[in-house]
Amino acid sequence: MKAEQIKELDKEYIIGSYGRYDLVCDHGKNATMFDKDGKEYIDFTAGIGVNSLGFADEGWIKAVEEQLHKFQHASNLFYTEPGVELAKKLAERTGMEKVFFCNSGGEANETAFKIAKKYGNTMADHRKNTIISLYDSFHGRTVATITATGQDRFHTECFEPYAQGYDYAAANDLESMKAAVEKNDPCAIIMEIVQGEGGLIGLEKDFVEGVQKICDEKDIILIIDEVQAGIGRTGSFFAYQQYGIHPDIVSFAKGIGAGLPIGGVVCGKKTCDLLVPGEQGCTFGMNPVVCAGANYVMDTMDDEFLAAVCKKAEHLRAELEAIDEVEKTTGLGLMIGVKLKNKKADEVVNELLANGLMTLTAVDKIRLLPPLTISQAELDKGIAIFKKVLG
Ligand SMILES: Cc1ncc(COP(=O)(O)O)c(C=O)c1O
Image (cartoon, rainbow, N blue to C red):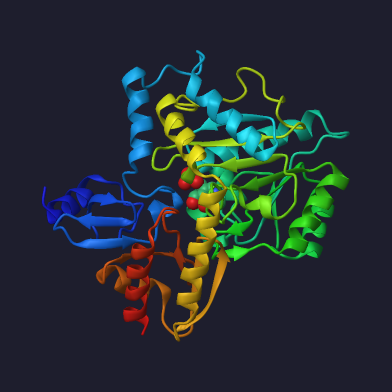
């Protein structure tokens, strides 16, 4: 099909819940995508943080293909190997205990909420079930996770009523958190270490440590949402691991699947044995093909790989900060927000695309989430396009 025909069919047959950029993707390799006419684009988006190993990684394809030849799905009514291997790796990597697998970040957070509510309703010294999240957060698009998302722009009247039992505190403001805890007596607090959709806002170490202390003192389940910041993106396997905290539940998705759908939660001692048969499920959860690919992702992300992520992030940030129009960069590692001095982020993103660079926005910033495997040559091509457009 020609590019124009694909766009027309999309308009005719796809429900219009997305605004799309003017690029019809055809094929890609690592951080380079080609459109239907063979035009090259450097990818600083990784499919919104999903393609951790870039496009068409050979090792990942081999792992997925090998499992496809064995069997593609059996359901959670039977034992399967790739998922248990993956869960063991996640437990070992975090020092936590057990994993539940689903398909997406939203479902992962829903699962975290159910586990936290069960803890609060049945295990705490009194019944409690409210969940506190941060303003400017993003936790998903289901009714509960959109309610937990602390951004008013997502709480439009047309989807009312939202879920009950959610309240908010300001990021990096311990007094605000203490007040929310006082008011709500919550069972859980959920937060992203770097708020992605909310504008690449990194949490301060003092705040994160302070929240951990509150959770310890008041027997509150600490949920860290690593859906966007996790799986090597910030230079550690999970972003929270740079903060010396011990969450009860870590939700993950996106990058661990490297392009196939997966989500899940890793649970610590307090939360890992709460759910019993029938209380949570997911038809595709722990799918062996997806898990085989995810095992390859986890095996690839050793210390050397993570050190390379930090080096690439340093280089990219230094080059961007040297551009006159750039006010500052925010975020952590290869999760980068670019705040401009005068130009509008959404207009610049379209200009970058026209010049062969795929980028994203997050509120008022340009958001960069390149594949973690991006080569020096691809990085430098992308930087050159930035300089041309902003120069
Ligand atoms: C921090 C965070 N949590 C949850 C989600 C929802 O993930 P999904 O779109 O896979 O449901 C996202 C998606 O961008 C996210 O960034």
